[in-house]
Length: 372
Image (cartoon, rainbow, N blue to C red; front, side, top):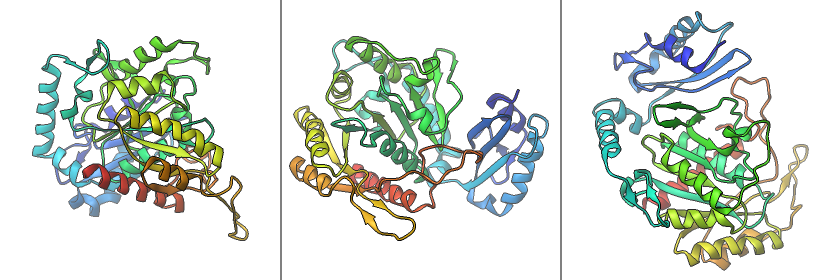
């Protein structure tokens, strides 16, 4: 049986041409997906090595021939500036900082009696962004997943917590089939499309329902922060349950520095209900980055004509009510992905698709606003 561990072991001898070090040692083998023995993965190369991309792809295929039947699907891309710094002197620096953090005593947090993992400390450098909505069914998780992937495509180190404990959907939406493994006393999140993901869905058998009260929800959320090996992150996105219940309140208490994006449809009632989630953020002194309007219109593939099936103006009205900006308006639809594709996912738009480019633009807006 092909496993992620066997793939990485087989690729251990393959060296990055410019850096003269193992691809796996440098962490340059990403997005490993195994579906019915078919393997797909991404290889990240130094910009000086991109001329040898075809040769590197052949080296990877050859190295995998001992563990993989058939030809694996290999994607090759150049390293970002951040990845370049980590692969050189910056990598040693990041590792040293990580080691130093691991030796620090737990930091007392703002939640009642909560001993925060260092990732939650305001000086960790992690930007926390909670994605909220007033009601379910507005596409909040779709926005969260695609924003996380778009941030990763911009070269950012991104984590995603599926905090919708009752309605977890992120693993299925991203096409994740494997389960996390424990290394030492930490659980390794699953990496997909460059995003490190953790979800209650990984720990539930056969899509069983979760029957918990508030305190248990808070405990699980704390575990997601404290017991997961997140490594170094730039952004950690939290897909909140709809409404203003226990989990949303726990997030506001645990992460006072968290920012928030409110998702709604253009329907007046959806926007009216979403205003409650925004009001909760304002009451707890959390910065609202802006509003995303989902399902803004339906565009006919045959004629290109737009139909506003849920009405118009809800997102703009909500932004005005909350004193923030309308960041994006996404149409009603689904990615044009096929199950036979090696890196199939039901809900992630391709980077070169029209909506994929719109999510890249949204990601850049978020990066610019957080930088301020």
